[in-house]
Amino acid sequence: MVADSFPSERYRSVVAAQEGEPARAESIEATLGALTALARSEGFADARADAELEPGDSLAVTFRVREGPRLGLDRVVLRGARRATGEFALRASGLVAGQPVRGLDVERVRRDLEESGAFAQVGTPRLARDAEGRLVLDVQVEEGPPGIVDAVLGYLPPSAGRSGEVVGTARVDLASPFGGGRALALALDRSPGLASSFSAAASDPFVFDLPVRAALAFEGEGRDSTYNRQRVGAEAGVRVAPGLTLALTASREGVQPGQAGTRAGPDGLPRVRRSSAWFGGVALRYVAVDSRLAPTRGLVLATSAEQGVRSREALDSLALPTRVGQQRLDATARVYVPLAGRLVGVIGGDARLLLTDRGETTEATRYDEGELFRFGGATSLRGYDEDTFLGNAVGRALAELRAGLGGDTYAFAFGDLGAVRTPTLGETPGETRWLPGYGVGAQLETGLGLVAITYALNPDLPASRGKVHLRLQFGL
Image 1 (tube, helix red, strand yellow):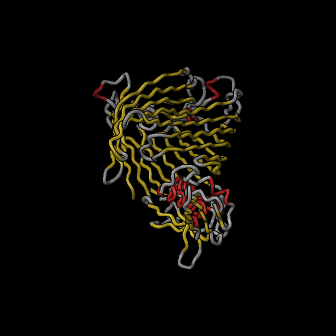
Image 2 (cartoon, one colour):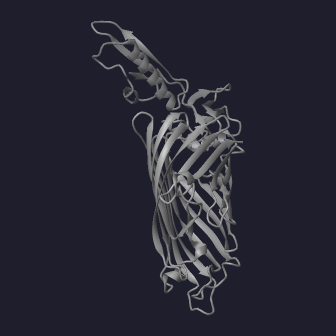
Image 3 (cartoon, helix red, strand yellow):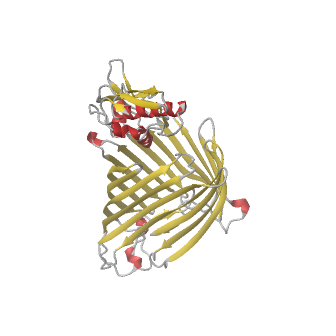
């Protein structure tokens, strides 16, 4: 092994032809390719490898690597990109323009670009020279649509005292519309009755050209004439490992009672008290799946923990504290496991928890309806009406069996087991409910986008009165 510039010992690890083995042309060719790739990954763009054969009693093979000059990386060239820029690709992959390339891991660069969310497909990067002789990283990419519309619709059949109605959520995600990886999301949710919510979020993956992702979000909810709730949140996060993000969060929220919410119950307390709160916390997210739309193996984990202080409206007639400490925890997990053939198993869970310090004398005064979690429906507990349950601790465990039908199309059967802990509210005692749900569904890949349909039941529903949910996802 002979090299012009790089230590020859560094190359020996990739030599496929071993001493004492029969000389095979394919082993020699594989070694030459591996030597060239290794040299180029170290910034020697003009490197080439040759094999010198010396016949005798045994064949002596000398591999020679001619590296040429070591160059600094000038830029990233994205072939096939219309919006994303080379500067964005540099930051997303952690490369620095002008510095000599050392130990380039092209597979890691490819994964980093995929994780950025700006591309539907990313080819294997390769070092090359441009027309002026500068060193560039050439990457073939395919961008997704600049925006995605995701709508989940459900129909609630008529029941006692209520006519049938359509409920659901419509969401628009703009992914890197200006090429810098920035994103914007808008969502509108229509719940049963006169309840609705709106949310908007914007994020920048490299705020002030730093490797820090910053995001701002607004959420507003109106619950007929009971209350209105608003929340403004911000977070700043860093990527600490492939697929793993750690973030700091802060939020400000307020609850304003409506006409029905201000009415006092038999205990003298209003149904909803006016309040405001500050929260701060940390969030951890990990995503490692083989497909974003139809995973067959991998893990998704997201969790956040917040600590805050809530100030409630003072009540002259009752000596209750107006400032209380609160803690909130959110967690989501999904595990995808390939089974026999095209079968895939999915297990996971979701949980949300709100705790209020015991400064107030009873549970009835520690919690307020306007601060609790709504639970049930297509995105939380299938087989039940949207937002039909209310609690300070809600969650579900789920299991799915999916049968792949090609591409992103699959059919599935599922089972959910939900749990809702409702605290004492006024004169209504607290309770814990266990809520099973089950059903079947399918996700179909069509020319317009993804279409998913679910038919869900619970033990109290006859088979003919299941909950039907339709999801449509298409690009703009």
